[in-house]
Length: 149
Image 1 (cartoon, rainbow, N blue to C red):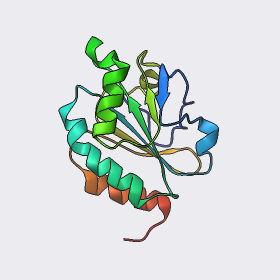
Image 2 (spheres, helix red, strand yellow):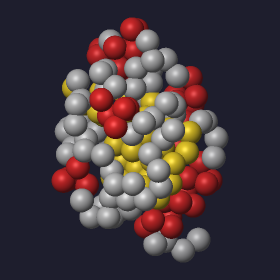
Image 3 (cartoon, rainbow, N blue to C red):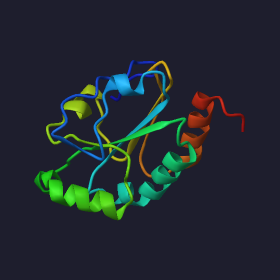
Image 4 (tube, one colour):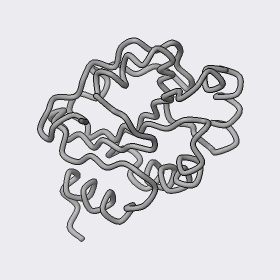
């Protein structure tokens, strides 16, 4: 079971390492935030990445986007490989590498890809998992940002 709606964002702690800069929960205070879980062994994650990047660029300055790499096997623990795949897929947002599943457990997350949208008060407003549904994600993000469609 994933985090319940309106739950507070867990502390962003326990990273094995960070790529593209480190972020603490304090850094996203007062800023709507999208946290997405992905894995280098997940084909759907790679397919969805252009959408996530588009989101990041479209909402630049209004929405913080943080990637969480959640390993699903031993092979997923290779930091060089994570960095390589991230670069290949244009992930320039901060990447929390969660090799010990500390953040994964805090989010009670079982899926990749998975998307968590938090409002400016740090409350979870939307969760979705799986490959499709970018329209729904866009709608929810717009709602959190107060953008009329």
